[in-house]
Amino acid sequence: QVQLAESGGGLVQAGGSLRLSCAASGSIFRSSMMGWYRQAPGKQRELVASITSCGSPNYADSVKGRFTISRDNAKNSVYLQMNSLKPEDTAVYYCAATRFLGSGVDYWGQGTRVTVSS
Image 1 (cartoon, rainbow, N blue to C red):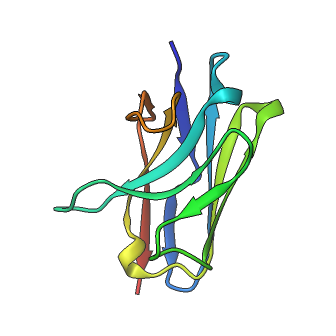
Image 2 (image 1 turned 135 degrees about the horizontal axis):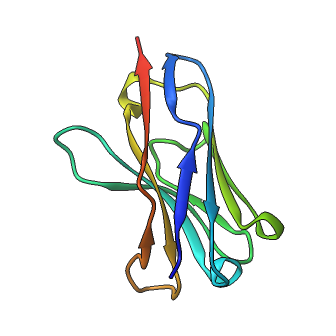
C-alpha cells in the first residue's frame, strides 16, 4: 500500500508563490510517474503537472512558465513550485502516483488547499 501526504498549501495573494510537497511511503515511488492535479469548486479534477521516473516533466498550458515540478527519489518526495499565482489557481491540489504509463492513477493523496486572493 502506498500513502501520499501533501503539504504546503495555504492562502497567498495574487503574484505570490507557494511550494507544495508530497511525501510518499512504499517502494514504488522511484518507478512511478508522479503528478499534481487540482480541482476547483464546481470543476473537474485536472492534471497540472507530471514527472516521469526519469525526471521528465510535463505541464498543463495554463501553468507553463509559472509552475515547476520536481522529484527527489532519495526522499520519496515530489514538489510543485508555484510562482506568479493567479486567483484561477485556487483549488485543492492532489498528489498522484501512476505505476504504469498509459494507465490511470493508482494512488491519490488527500489534497491540500491553495487559495489565491486578488
